[in-house]
Length: 326
Image (cartoon, rainbow, N blue to C red; front, side, top):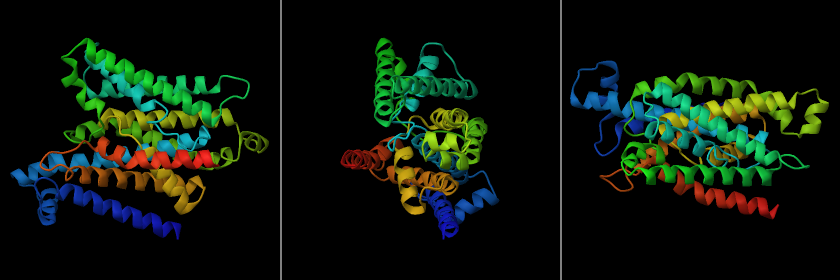
């Protein structure tokens, strides 16, 4: 049954990608989409499909998959059901470092900015884990949540301060302030795919150890697991996944919260199923959100980060109220 559900999700993802390529301000028949991929003739429609629509759909799918898997992994290692790259400040740290590098240090080139995003994600994550672990009781869900919220606010404040210090910087960094998959080309995705792929591979290989870690540190240690090593590798996977996503699509929020909870409802608590499902459904959600964002205020487009926030805020409030009741 779980295998069938995963296959059905993949089929739905393929259909969503096809719809993302075909529909928008200008609708393009699916037959023309196929011709542009199989028999490219250099016409306007074929150019739009190859240089704009296809990269956009693939970037949305890749970023959505990475953010959902990163959220599922973070929720295990922090024992926090609302942990995600956006809520724990990882995305905010990556964005701040990118804006600092582009606006003040004149760093350019996607390869360099990808490394900057990874360093920012790592720095923010390290601060959050350090602050959330201070005290006799060590890391707790409440402490890690407060630490993440504090670091996110801190980095966003620094970001605003940088922009206020230089009015010309706003236009340069606007793309990094609101998550968006529009206006990117395939070379940008190719540049970050190795980092995304490494992060995804590490996460999938940790599926079994994450099942043990989810039982609690004491049980995991009694079963012979090196919990510190598992958490370190999991943190590395999160940094690669979140940093790569921010580098190519900016700070898209709430995918890492919504999808893991939906997946656990569907398939249970086995991460050998949770992580593949998160990858597929995360990709599906972001592709569908990007497609929907084109029709909210036509003929203008709403950035997909706004659309995911509209979907995610009510879900986040529901989870917070649920945790308070329990």
